[in-house]
Image 1 (tube, rainbow, N blue to C red):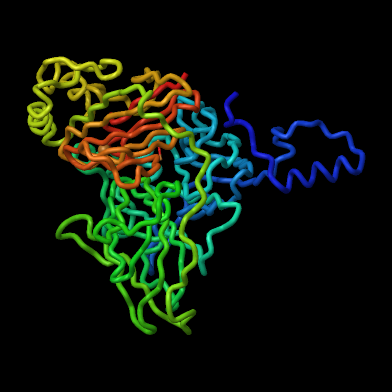
Image 2 (cartoon, helix red, strand yellow):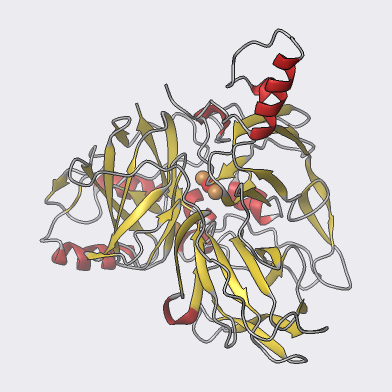
Length: 499
Ligand code: C2O
Ligand code: CU
């Protein structure tokens, strides 16, 4: 049996059941019954509203419970979460629980795992928090527009023994495209965004506000949970002489390490948990700068040293998080699947250039499991799809965003290890996300990765080859797509079937 539907027996539930037995009550011995697990109940109401992003002024947006981000959902590992969604939007929606390993029917993908929630309708999501970590939620219906208008929120699953820090802080990074009058630009899904790097906005927020300063105290240790909720913007954060230590990626613990070149990189949908020791001098302001786009560096926020120092030196408390119960892929026994991404502006050029390095081979459209054939990089089928508005292809196929009858591109044998060897044959970055599983990133351009990090979203640079590995232990049809939401709109998604 799959362990996904079964909630762990928490200490609280255990005590409750022992107490009940002691009292002589007839308690059915069903430790997996939702009635005996600690359940957190949450209500989410997506609706149009107004938001104060910048002072002064308000912006019409779409909000969960009147705010963007929506409420921070927090629960303990092993607890069960039940979320009642009342759709007060004027259109269909769903809620996807990004990065959580949950039963397929709770995954929130319209037409694939559920009927979309109609205007005025209700849907109840219910699942167990198997993994501790930093996750988030957002609609999976017309994602580019619904997320771009403000529908997203953080979901934090706490470790049974929280890591020792002075403060646990979430920064949900948002990126808005506002007009001169401060309204959300209505140009969702325009051709230019789809074919280039997506809807990169002009107003970056932390927790729904354009930030000025973030007050810190000298000597303080902060666990900073960064979540990139932007449609398309990639961040590369420089913490101004502070030395952040990465302790988790996409919610999953990693060997604590300093980020490469000191820069914390987050593609859309990605999360990074940092330990940040406030080693600056009392009274200073230190600018956190985003350096991802060359020539477009900007100050995200100032760390404002305020108040009395907490301590003189950084504490030497432990940094490592306990591992989550992830099945370890067996690389020897793994099946190997090739996935090639193509399309986008200048896509033909890059695919051809990479075709050379790949020995003149390109992917045959729709070839299951990545069969190779000698052909031109752009096939007649791809041409036809492009003429009908598709911009991006996975193994030569562009998906139709409505998601109606998507056929599985790969069938992955259940409980077996699989390697997905991905080639980014495009001129653009793509954060590639797999639903229902976390995977190890095992190599980049043929080089083994240093930390073999677990992720649910991996950022591929232009022309990069990345291998991931995982045990396909969660049955169902799962989305595999680019999290630049305009690339997803432009066809960059597929379904992996685990059976
Ligand atoms: Cu956060 Cu399919 O997405
Ligand atoms: Cu993409």
